Length: 404
Image (cartoon, rainbow, N blue to C red; front, top):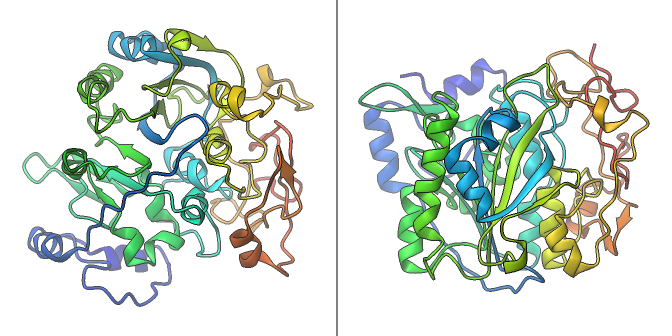
């Protein structure tokens, strides 16, 4: 088996020395077994009250058009348990940039599923959670051990795709992957059940099924079945349902010629009873995940597209956030979000600098977090983030970031 280090070198990446024994371990069976035995694992807990929910569990499925997902009987069952978001969008294609965007507020031009590393000074929602002591973690189905940094891991019996790095947003950011304490919170999905039983689940969690369970290498029928099977018992579990909000959505649609609209559902005991079984037709995208977390816990912002995103209405109705209409010069009906603008990770050179967060931006009383400001103080890179509902794409790129 090719080692993770070899993959990194092949990708032309610079590997900083790591001090812990499992960093960039080879992916052969014996190597993984040895790493699994020594990998640090932690399950920190917290009980920071939110304005609407006290826990958020995010579940992402794969590559399905809205109508196909909404028509699946098991996903329809999920939708009837909560609020169906009918106007929810991915931000580009393919998978990896959508995962990156959902925690970092941008995809930095990424138009591939490569072995990408985002610089350590680029903050994420995890940094914002840390400022208030809000626990977080990831659960990745069939990840071979806690904090695994490899490109992927196959089923050792069938050789089918199982875990893939491109579906693990936190590990792509060096602010996480260069810190053993943070890698210790990125665990196999089996540890979700251990944490559930011990009542040590974090308050923010990102759950990724494997490549079969999420529908990527199978079908929406498989993904829907997995989702209902996973969620149904949890909806009656007191260790999970503790003013908990669950988001079930997809990374992107599968038809690149269509608008990149995807199914999303909010459910859980944090959803008011009068909203169960309803729809919300407002415009949302992956950045709304960050914005809604910021509004719920009174966090500052990343100063990126989290500020240019709507907060989910069920949250906004309590926090006082205003749901804003699409403000683009190109009507929303003519925006497809199916192509990335240029940037650091774009395979077509354009805009090779990381855009600086808009450190002066303020929305709904929330300013940019001081941790972000300290990282970028004095930086002269351009910034393209605005406080309006008009995110760019490859056909409508920020100035200086048009793909070549």
